[in-house]
Every structure is written in C-alpha cells, then in structure tokens.
Length: 294
Image (cartoon, rainbow, N blue to C red):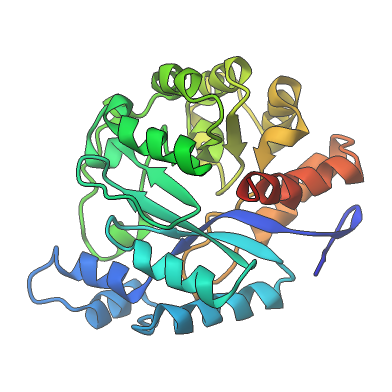
C-alpha cells in the first residue's frame, strides 16, 4: 500500500497515533465525578469507542486504509491500558505497533513494542525509568520519551486540568541514560516540542536517538528566530540525517481521523528541500519498520 506524494508512491508508517480506547475515556471520566466514558466522549464531540479494543482497531484500520497508510504505532495514552494496544496489534498482525504509556514507578513489564514515558506528566526524573530501559535493552524494544511542551487537547475539551511539570521535560536529561543503553532506540517526539536545540544536541551525541516529526509543531513560535517547517527539517537532516527521522501525525480522534494535512505539509517541505525519493521512503516509513523489526 502506497500513498501519493510529491515523489510518487510512498509507503507510509505513522510513528505517532494515539489509541484513545474505551478504557482511556473511562480513565478521564474517573477524574470527573458523575461522568462516564460515554458522557466524556460526548463532551469531546466524538463517538465513544467500542469496549472491544479489536473492534476499535478495525475502525482505525479502515481509517488508515482510506488514507493509504500501511502501518502505524498505536499509543495507549493512559497508564494501565497496554492491553488495548496489545489486542489491537494482535488482531492486525504487521499493521500496528503497540506502544504503552507507563509510569515507571508503578510499571510492570508488558508485551508491547515500545514503552512511552511522559516525565512531565507524571512528575519524575528520567533516571527513575532505569528499569524500563533495562527491560527494553533485554527485550530489544524501543523507548519513547516525551520532552518539551506537553498539552492534551482532549483534557481541555472536557474541562480537566493538565498540571504537568516542565522541570522534567528537557531532552538533555536523557543523555546519560541514552549513553548507558546504546542498543535501545529512543524516540523524542515533536522534534523536542520546544527544546529543538537540545533534542538535536542529544541526537548528535547519541546515535540511538530518533526524532519523531509529529503534530503541527506549533512549538516553533517559541524560538528566538523564526523557524518554518522547512528550516526545522533542514537542521534536523544536517544533524541526524534521514535515517533517524520518524514521520508521525499525532492523530488521535475519529472524527477528524488521520491528520492528512500533517503529511501534506511535511512531504511538501521535504520535497522543496530536495530530499530524494529514497530518503523520503526512510523518513515516512522504513525507519520505523526497521527499529520495530529488531
């Protein structure tokens, strides 16, 4: 399956799709007295997902088919929801990669392809995640570490505060643990989400660090000098090259579904920079497939 692009056909593997399962909505409802998963979804303006993760995975598979996206990471977006992405991946062999958000202070190993750490959300230094990295090294798994600005749009939609602590969000903090576990692929999403310089420094020093390109990258407005998407990609390519960039959209809700505009904007920027078809294939799919096949 290939998607049309400025280069022609392009195999797409999205490295950043949130799997907002029924359990995810139930977890939000538990934070608001009197609410249910159904009422939270209604307040967010979306249908409540089916309780069956397999059925919800079929909804996402249809959405990705409609957009000619061959593979995607599915991120379980509350701790304890790893069963949902495990079931989704098992029901669609080779289609989905299971990513699970964990709190390392309460974590138990799971049969997932990658573990997602959100230190600012759960307020811990990255060193507290040492057991996660040990597990990843032993089992040849990937670790995703969210750095920089963190906002969860659906929480705002349903009136939940997001009291995150940015003291724990600097990519530089990841440097010692990335050096300690050189065989573990470490993914920093959104180009560092405002810590672009620091994410580039980390990736330059640690060849096991990858940058995910997902979301609108609105963090660019925080930069001292104006950046646009082409400049971001140019700098990232200069530092890490095309083999350590992972295309992602940060898609989450159906509707609106898969964020095709993110693909259009990023493919246009890379094409205008003169990126070759071969390197575009790496960025938009092959890099993710390679680290998931370890």
